[in-house]
Image (cartoon, rainbow, N blue to C red):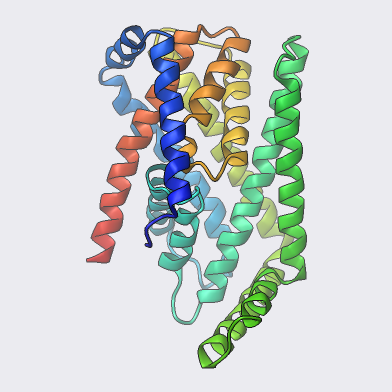
Length: 317
């Protein structure tokens, strides 16, 4: 994988600086002490992550044509690697998806693999937006509308982005990209790329013509997203700061939306911590506990991410 653009690295460093500032400003000793007090509970949080990875992989697997589906363990491994790359490397939170498409592809089924990843990203974004809408409704029902404007703006941005992404897929996303590239180049390599782009667009159109598989994939994404809400509930329980499931849903769903909206910031550094602090406070979680939650989630990302990168390394040998 190529070294990231310097702008992405700077965005990540700025986000990291923001996260560090929040922790120091709210009492670093108490917050870090809260993370340390979790002890072996972190192992449970790390292990629990397998639920969202496997269910997300099941959604992705359903998008392959019959006869071309890899096993669920294989795709779960690739989904894990994808998440690890997006979490720990400065790749604008999309490099891992490009990597999983490449790792899952075969010489004869490359278009199907690319199409499955593109549609999987689209469906995941749809479910993320729906969960965020539910979370916003729950937040407003509590009378907590302090951040409603910012959240609504992020929702609208994500919804418009998802609609545009879907529409351009229907128009032939990769053929459009290939035609743009053709304006500045030519030759046999370009001809091959154009042919591949048309094959990929055709595979995407064929996939959208399989509504039953799309519905099942959407259901798996619902379960995967719900399991991430469960992760927040689990962490708060282990911290002896239990919160109702609807509070955990508000925190996780809206944080995920804001992190997606800020996809150019590697790993959502700073964005995730700031969102958890603001939203946690709105639903009654003390600021120190909200930042402890943020650091535990980040610690889990680091542990699972490093292991995932090691798994990727083993595949490359």
